Image (cartoon, rainbow, N blue to C red):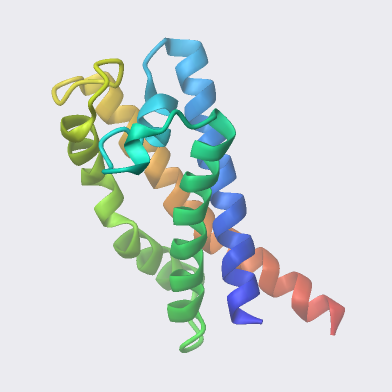
Length: 149
């Protein structure tokens, strides 16, 4: 049950983050969604022209792994919501600096640059929202499971 809960939490939080970045890109013109989905720097994989849906599936797969790891740690003992939030913020902390890695490794020049402070702000905001979604969805699924028993 832990595994499936992690899959669902990872799926929904990744979906919401992806849609948030797609919306930010549409409204502001800052290529946040493009940066989130970009895989052109990965050997072999980056040489293929993937569809947007396939690239989104790559993003979702990473999010599912994060969801599974999050649930694994969250189930180890009874945490308060605040503790679950701190756990999520710690687990997701590498994603905040991932902007600089992805931006510098990207082959395409359409992704935001290393010093694009507007894009950096959107990236951090989006991933903080993602971090907050994990405990919210975790508690939501916990309540639904308790109600169904």
